[in-house]
Each structure stands twice: as structure tokens, then as C-alpha cells.
Amino acid sequence: MIKKELEDAINAQINQELTASYSYLGMSTYFDELSLDGLASWMQNQHGEEQEHAMKLLNYLQDRGGRVQLAAIPSPQVEFNSILEVFEISLSMEIENTTSINELYDLALQHNDHATKSHLQWFLDEQVEEEKSMEDIIANLKLIGDDKAGLLYLNDKLGQRKAEEEA
Ligand code: MG
Image (cartoon, rainbow, N blue to C red; front, side, top):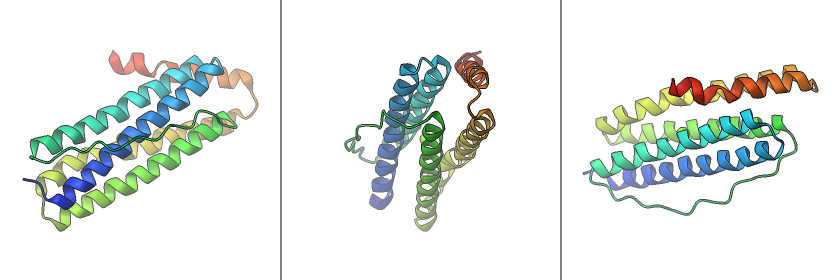
């Protein structure tokens, strides 16, 4: 049986992953409205990944005999000032998420809950990837500046993500 304090923290993390998932879905609608299909599909993929993260935690909590509590998920932002802003917000969300995964890991350490530590290891590694991919896209967008051809190239490139991962 998992400790109550850890159960609460994992429930909060489930909510955070679902909130991120919903935020990325909101971002994908912004890109769809701009007819940037590649960026929209990249964000839909991101939406699916965050949902999977929530499910990994939810299933783990159930396996440990914890009680899942599904709190409300706020409506996501769907209007932005620029494409760059979308990815800057995404990066800050991921940094926040890394902080909360770290805090969850610290809590597991305090409780000597080795199974939870082991489960969270995957999330720690995943956060390194998440932050890096947002940073790379931000760097690309800054290089592109106002160059429409560059933007269309990035749109095509990011649109290939799903196909690559499924291959
Ligand atoms: Mg996540």
C-alpha cells in the first residue's frame, strides 16, 4: 500500500500531465487555424504523449493500491501572439513539470519508497527529452525569424514526427 502523502502527490501529477495534454491540444488548434498542419500534428502528438504519461502514473497508483482522484482540468489557452510564444510557453510548462517530477522523487526518497523511485526514473529521463525538443524548436524559430520558407520547412519537418515514431 502506498503512503497517503505519495498518493496525493501522484494524483496531483496525474492532473498536471492531463493539464499539459489539454494545453498542447489547445496549441494544436491554434496551428490548425494558421494552416500549419505539421505543427498542428506535432502538437496533437504531444497531447497524446502527455495523456500516456498520466495513464502510466494512474496505472501505477492503482497497482500500488492507491486511490485515483481525478481533479478538474482547466480550459487551455487557444490564442497566442506568435508561433514562438507557443513554444516558449511549452518550454516553461515542461520546466515546471520537471520541477514537480523532481519533488515527487524527493518525496519517494523521504518515504523510502523504492518502487516509486524506480517508476519515476523513466519520467526524469523523459523530461530531459521534453525540454530539449522545446529548446531545439525555439532555437530553430529564432533562426527562421520572418522567413516564410524557413517556417514552411520547419512545419514539414515537425509534421513528419508521428510517421517516424510509428515506423
Ligand atoms: Mg509529461
